[in-house]
Amino acid sequence: MAGWSGSVLRAVVDTNVFVSGTILSRGNPFEILEAWRRGEFILTTSREIVAEVEAVLRRPKIFRKYRLTEAQLTRLLNALEHEATVAAPSGSIPRPASYRST
Image 1 (cartoon, rainbow, N blue to C red):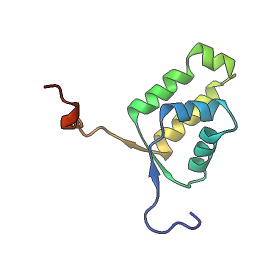
Image 2: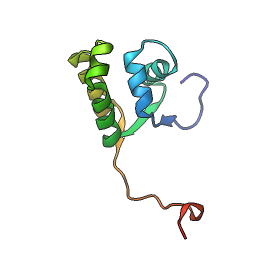
Image 3: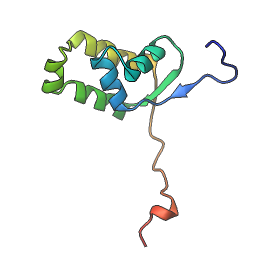
Image 4: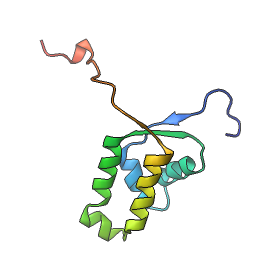
């Protein structure tokens, strides 16, 4: 990455970014996905996020309205499975004391 020194940037991308970046060919979500495709950062995701992305994009209203194809969806899901780091949950995250009920 030009101008970057040190560790490689890693990022987790929200489902909404995947959906918006897939159905629209402009805007920040699209640019984020394009930066990932160009190798500007390492995408870290989870099986749960991948499943949620697929479920949302397969919703008939979205699939038809944005004229998605099985090929587009397959390419995205394959890229997520093979080109992103798919992290497994490592357990529960402790809640801060301020969120615990008394």
